[in-house]
Length: 363
Image (spheres, rainbow, N blue to C red):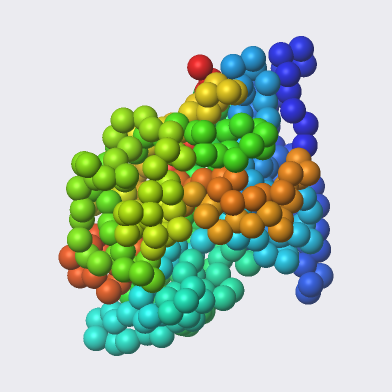
């Protein structure tokens, strides 16, 4: 992957397609490189709809990769701890791997302790999607997947489109759209880990703000209890910019013990709204700054608490504990089992739509 310094000629915006690797069944997976005129570059693969890399400028104008990813397609096939894919059908946890919809109980894989996580054993992150590209000043790639009725235990044939667009203003926009032929549940998100240092060190010096007055406390298996707890006076208060590592080890707080750090959902609204600022992230040494805007009612902050150094990035650094953090925009976890949570039910004739925008700058 190229990086662009100030001395480089302005890159030509557009999209390039290359073979990324070969699936076990012989199908080819592709790597799509989106570039804008400012010099930002985003790489996406149609395997798992992964965001493979994303560059952003520091205060000297130097572009470096700011998302965790592994070196080769073979590494992605082996599996990652969700470093950048679209997860589905249901991002986050469903208690005990079961839910009831319209009077019928559905059973899902239990793949996270006693719970179901991120769509199951062979979720959207392990599927080969079809791809359509759009060239131009704001290049885009749209990835399509049809999930058959009963896949991973979920009802309904689901048609999903995810579009990654690289904007002129260094924004990476992700648009989700889906329809179903039977009532089902759906909660899509991207699971990128961000590290705005350019992989120089872990993410604990990053300064985070989250525009949320409440978060969702969980039980010891990380299923929300149903309470919306005010962040005021707690280690979950990021309404003012706060260093991520400042309070992350405050194990006097039971919720920190349950999550091994931050692995919780912050509530913006009870219903999806127009695109609005949900969070900001700043890395003081590089000056890189990221704004996260979303139409979703919540965001899961996960601080890479289970990264263990066994995986290395393309930069050659081991991804040790808390080397990156995730801002997964979504509906609330376990919504199918919590009638007073915003609904995640999608019915025939309805269209699921969701947008999240990560916009990069430096200061």
